[in-house]
Structures are given as C-alpha cells and as structure tokens.
Image (cartoon, rainbow, N blue to C red; front, side):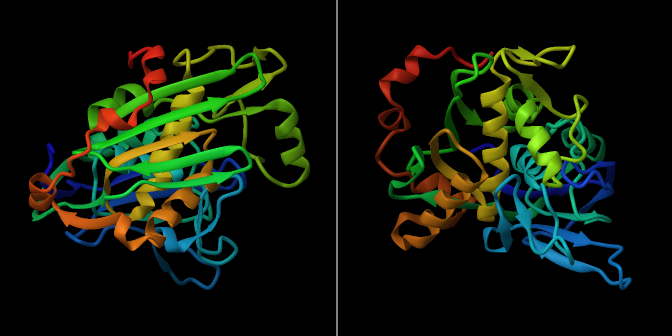
Length: 317
C-alpha cells in the first residue's frame, strides 16, 4: 500500500470541450478539497442562476445505458462522468471539487489523457488524514445476458481482470489483467479511447445521442477496418478502454477498493450491478483506514482467484 494518507490537488486545473452525446460545450474546473470530503460535482450556471452539489457515489447514479449519469441531467445532473472519475481514481486522488458549467463532462479525445494532464499540471498533495478503503471480504458475482462480473478478496491492492468478446474481426476476444496503481494507469490505461461501430453511431444520431461523436474522440469501426487515420494507440486498445470505464464506474464505491474485479463483456450497467451486489451483502465488504488495511489482509491470495487461462495472455507492455 503505497499511499496511506488522503490526497487532493495542489491547485486548480481547467479542462474544456464538447459532450459526446449532447455536443454541448462544457468547462470543468478541478479544485482542491478538504480531507474526508470525497469527490463532489458542483453543477454551476443552472437556468435559474443557482448551483447544485452532487456527490460522486453509486446512490446518485441514474443511468448506465450509454454512459454513467449522476442525477437528473435535465436539471442539475452530470452525464458521462466515467473517464474523469477514472483519472481521479487511477491517480489515487481522494478529495476533489469538480465545478462544471454544463450537463455533460467533455469527452476530449475519448480517453482519460486530458484529465491526467490537467491533474499533473495542478499537482497532488497529501493530507493529514488516513486514506479510506473498501475491502472485499467475500466473493460477489452478478450475471446479465451472457455477461458476468465479480468481486474477489485479495491480500492488498486493486486488480482488474477484464475480458471482451466482439463478433467484429477488428476486436475479437481480448483480455487484460492490471494491478492498478498510478504508474500502471498512466502507462497502460489512461490513453485508451472509447470506441463504436459506424452503424450503431448512425442509429444513435437518429435517436438524439452521440451527437458530438467523431474521429477526434472515438475509435470508429466499419466492417473489418478502423476508420481513424492514426490507427490504434495500443494493439488491444478496446479492452484497455473497458478497464478504464470500470475504474471510473467502480470509483463510485466512495473509496479505493482492495480486491479483484473480474468481468466478461463488461459495460456501465454490469459494473453498477456488481457494485450494487457487493453493497447488498454487508458481510462481503468493510470500510477500513490505511493502517487497518495493512494489518488485516485475508489469507486467500490473489493468485488463487486468477484462472490458469490468464497465463495465455501477454503481460502489460
């Protein structure tokens, strides 16, 4: 456990862009926040001139169909929060106030890279309070339409074992295992972009979604080819982005997780379902502070939960 104290930003940082679904411009400003305050959205510039506070936690999630949405976006909610939350969680930031002047977090290039850059420019400082963790104590599993996800206990840290399976020859079946820490997030995950199929995007446009989607912020797939002239950032960028989404969605637990998250064909809904299942079984988890997390590790080892088949997949680059 590298970081035992809570963290926040050294100074504020600003990012601006368009929402991928609304195509509406939005600016976010990340502010330092007090210890124990968590990650909080401040929705500014509402039609009546007021502001609204919205905590980044699972109980405030209202939609997971195309993205993760907090609150009512027609009033004071915020959509497409997962890439920003992934950056905060991946870099182990505990307390941040996110001021936003629109209904959707800007998509930027479709990854977390711009948010990581903004955080790096602002700097990270430790605070005089121990970090809080959510420790998985018992296995919890959910299944939905041929997909599944589960939490498993681990001695230390947070690991993801993500597998995707698409009929498209461009994607196919991909799997990655990550032992998450800030260095791994920066190097292996942060730059992985969202992706979609041209036929699906055309349907979404007609339905009023994905209005801001373009080759500037998404990997576009048509038949057996990728339309982006620059190609992929990683050979398996697709599964890496699914890991990025999972990190953002699971950060809504409200604390860094100690355990393993395994998923086959994950999505925002499945990530939320698994988190709900964990919270529904009170004996399956405990909130602990840093010194407790170091002193009380379960006897079961991470290796016991990763299937032998995982050895067939290459290690992280």
